[in-house]
Length: 327
Ligand SMILES: Nc1ncnc2c1ncn2[C@@H]1O[C@H](COP(=O)(O)OP(=O)(O)O)[C@@H](O)[C@H]1O
Ligand SMILES: Cc1ncc(C[n+]2csc(CCOP(=O)(O)OP(=O)(O)O)c2C)c(N)n1
Ligand SMILES: [Mg+2]
Ligand SMILES: [Mg+2]
Ligand SMILES: [Mg+2]
Image 1 (cartoon, rainbow, N blue to C red):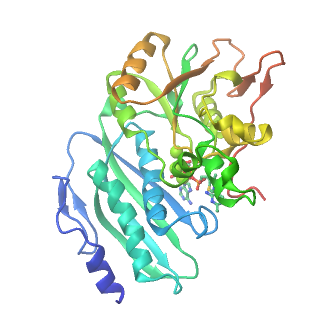
Image 2 (image 1 turned 90 degrees about the vertical axis):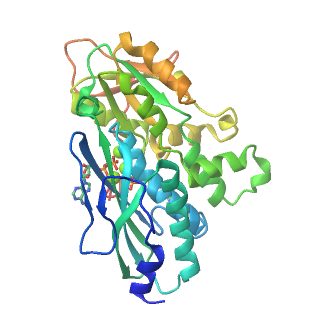
């Protein structure tokens, strides 16, 4: 199969989005849009950085590559619509394996009614995916990270630390039989759920600041604090974790839930007067929701995040987490 046959092979034969005028097959895609804001994001997935052939099957690579991107749309309040895929294919990957990556894309894109409208195919030394997503959101419902205000409630969806626990189970030398809920943790690592349903369900709330947790809670909370120029206080004991999470070494538990990343949960802040609406949205979207802290209303704020631990002094939670250029 050559490059052109490959493209023909992966093209969709119909489109779900009615706004599409031209998908794949010309020099560029064309869609029309009139009243909503257009939201665009890109995240890459690179062999031996984001996955290894030991930790992920080809299907998971496609699924997670698109899930990570959809997560950024959810973090802006946007509904996913389109995606484009740049792929560098090494010679030692079979066409069947590449097809399976695309089966991963198809599985999650079907779920959100998204269309593949373009991309690029090249040969390379390592498998590299560069995915671009496009979504739409109503003008006054964009969930910027600079929208946090004094006195807000700080919340998070789901459980934290699961993804790195899954990676640990996939890579550590100790036998998996020693652990409970192995399949759950591995699934959370390989096939994370972007919180689109929750993000849509909170549409009635006028102001929410939101970030998705790709680099760890500490990093994402600092991004909200810096962008909004507020101080955030987080209660250590309120961080939600899976019932079996406490089977891992204490140090790892702490490391993964604050600095691990790839959980693709949503972290945000909302006015206390909208908290009950948020709870209702969590209920109807079947999403776990936890109140984990608050935005300080003191005047001397500096865009920092602090951690409160029972019986211990308050410490600053620094912007540490997964960082590609920390050398
Ligand atoms: N190489 C790059 N060129 C241009 N913009 C970039 C580049 N890398 C990151 N960005 C932009 O920087 C911002 C933060 O990126 P990132 O930390 O990867 O976000 P996220 O963690 O939400 O995926 C985004 O607006 C992103 O588009
Ligand atoms: C083999 C392997 N090693 C390490 C990791 C852990 N890891 C890789 S990237 C990453 C953070 C998220 O990736 P990034 O590209 O920073 O996403 P973004 O913040 O741009 O959405 C983590 C925790 C992994 N998933 N697989
Ligand atoms: Mg990114
Ligand atoms: Mg993000
Ligand atoms: Mg991202």
